[in-house]
Image 1 (cartoon, rainbow, N blue to C red):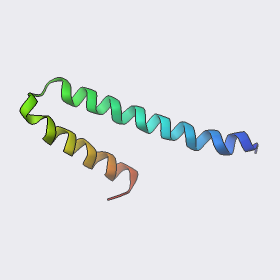
Image 2: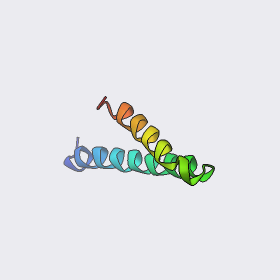
Image 3: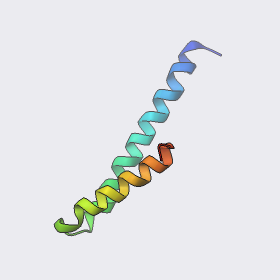
Amino acid sequence: MNVEVWILVPVASLVCAALAAVLIVSVALRGCASRDRAGVLRAVAEVVRAVRGKR
């Protein structure tokens, strides 16, 4: 396998994960009131941590 592939695959997966997290936050915050945003962001952060395996 090429060295470029060894570098490109992890970088591409990190970019995809970051894009997915941004889209989740955008969709979650679109319909909520301003007083609920902190709770929504906390819940999304918990999901992202769980998916990444940090929790």
